[in-house]
Length: 375
Image (tube, rainbow, N blue to C red; front, side):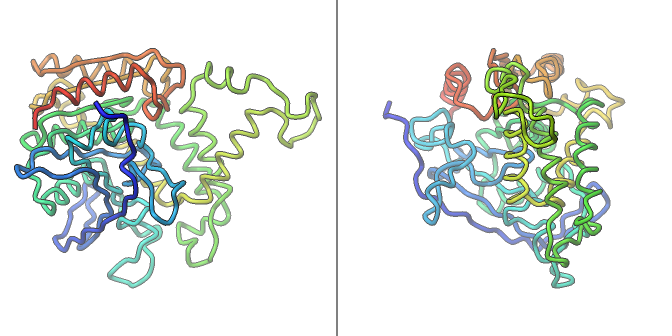
């Protein structure tokens, strides 16, 4: 085995689609485009493609860096590359910016072809199922009839699960990491608080803030702060910040006093500087709507009967947003249908964000799983 390496300099690509896409919301995109990146080489049989689906604030930029910015490293760079768990010497890896995203695919901050103006709040609601449908069309565009695997963490894991149900004949293996078959009421509540922070920002302007030359930064900042709290475990926050005071004493003010306050404000400010508020709203609603068992009377085993892929399901002990018992629901539903499924519950202190980190046991597990996939 060679020493793990970066995929190096990468560049985004764009695919345009003229065939209308009917959406679950009842809306339709008459034409649209997707921005994506690829790593590795598609083999002659076109059998080694792996689709990686991104989470809420993720993008198509999975690995490597851009020539213009060596510091803009892909969000799963620790996992993808030569000698890494998702080895690009073996696999042709694809990352796609979802419809409604803010990294170049058709979305609120892109031009509406029908009006010539930015979509803004007029961009239609999209669902996990819509994303999967558009990803399948991208696969057609690339000449890929069947994925060796579809992989994702968090919201990306929900997309991977949906792939196995919408296109069971087009995917051989599925990895669902730190995800759930549907959101709990508590999770929907967190999303609603975040959305209300954005919707009530005076600079939101009904979602058409682009036309006013402003950004609802305060709302986005609060939304990110709320979300970020749920991504970390209590132990992780205690170990990293505890009750440390920036000035070594109470200042009896509403300025930043505790280190955890400073961290959350920093994360919120940074997020508000690059992410789009309308995309945040659309994406959290897609999270809320995802429930493959809904059309089966709430029976997840009945919904999963359509799946034929081999599965890997991974959870993390300290992930309280998508707790291990939610992953076990998926496992039980698959076993009920006599599907081939491997399950790992990894003791990692980092909470929900564990799926993004370079944990030795987690990466060893993924390496072993990918090694077994024949292409």
